[in-house]
Image (cartoon, rainbow, N blue to C red; front, side, top):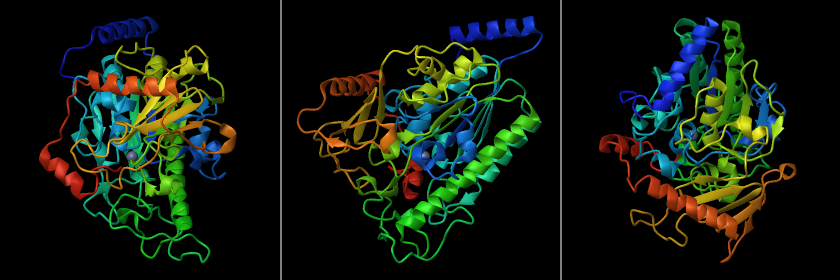
Length: 468
Ligand SMILES: [Zn+2]
């Protein structure tokens, strides 16, 4: 919903009650809130999810005094749809941002920032990936929107992004000079997204024993290195993996600095960190790519929540499956602001206290969709047997040709193993997925949102038609 439109009744009530509370207390005691999203961050790259001990030290420490969610899933394997779900608590087919290049968030959707703004919060966003710039209209409800991007991508100079150090500087400068409590800040770090170009990362020589990959003429990642990811003279899978981890270490240091300096400024916030999607490192034959499936390599993301001071900390590890749509209700509960009925997610506070009833959660890609119920996972083509895309063209390498498959979530065994299912999919999971896909399309009214043609063409030129 656009800020120019009327205030929803509950938001007005929340505003009045919060003002009364502030008057009664002689001040506003509602907590500051910090949402950190890291682009292209696989959960299992982090130490606290089974990765190397020195990767994600500061990120993992967010769960000290809070909770780490073992099984968290993005709603999509690409940036804009997933981020729009975090902000609206709805799935992509419901909120309309179904892809990076051609869709934007319609104004009628209520966003987390709008609800907090109406409740008296000062709201600010600092983004560093151009696919979540103004064109996506994700800034609804933010008083301050910072998308200053100053770094040109290695192989696509027309594509600009922002380094984590500069992103952190921008946030801290704003907090010191302009912020007034209570505030809600969203920070999106871009760096683990390819090309993996962190300063000081391993370079150059391939190891003799390494798996080497061809450099592709496109950005699909199917069977080789996407053109935009190619580093000079590097074709070794191991070197690319090392470089990806270097990017995560870089962001991790900035997350540590951000949290430390915010504490120095004062007004220690409630903090939630998650990712928009993961990245393939050989799963299903794809490398250094995302968007092509709804496999665990792409939709399993980290999720760490540290409640604001004074709130119940929750258990250190929660194994109930959670979704990107749960982020917004979690912040609203922490802010003691009523959650709009349109929000489909659940507050994590209710999930970790066991007050939540079982449910299905979903992930949607261009070609495939997944459902998770408890420990069970099932994915299939959105339109089973569809050999053509909606526009009548055949599916390209950017969308993997995969069988329907199931898996069991098991924390002890690394990423879950798939079992291919034939003509008889598991009935409960299939029914839930079918209902979700048909219901979500109905809710969206079959409307297709289009970006201005010029902008869509620009994004396509940059290789962003189906990726990222
Ligand atoms: Zn992304």
